[in-house]
Length: 324
Image (tube, rainbow, N blue to C red; front, side):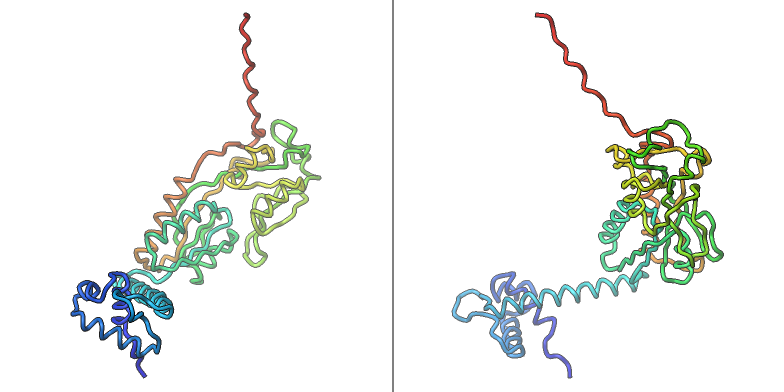
């Protein structure tokens, strides 16, 4: 059985309330006033509740009418969104995008990306998943994600990649730890009894943990956990500059320079990856372009490079006393 309530009736109700009269609503809808009045009468009959107070000169909603108006606005908004969505699909616009990002991807850039994407493509769903570096390619290959962001240099067959930006990595330790008091490179022998906090790859990802140096190591699944363990003085870790920058500036952490490491351990590169056999619509194209732009805009030199100490506060200038 077809529902007798129509969108025209709901739009007429909204117009009457917004315009303040049946005649003004009729002019807006380009219909005769009697048609609008008839539509409102039928809507009341079909709903079984009075929408307007007939004892007033101007259309005044009853309590039931105000509730129906709110529902009518929601229905019309959803229908308008549906029409925009299908109109975009007819022009090649995707219904959704699945993005899988490496845990090293800056959270601030991810938030900005989501905000910009919502403004540019409000009708397209964006699903975001954060994974370890070795997991990202598999998610893209099996179709779970349509675009990935990863930091591993190797690329499985079937994927194409686009260089985004380097991420500065800083080996850090709690400011109160004995290693923080030293200067210059830290010999590997001095790290034997110091726990290294490592961002661990999943056992089924098929990749070994990266840049493990200390014989003793604790493996964690996310960067925030690693940061908290380092702050607590439990060990050291090689963490992204964007994550530890404020901690270094505040003096809660200090950077160290392992003697055994080259510059490769102090910088990793992010890549956007996607399947080579996929044809992207405008939303995917926009997202790939914005990813590159965000990474370039967000790239700043590490304020505390490898081996630098925590910042020293400038002493206030001595107050000058003129002889009287």
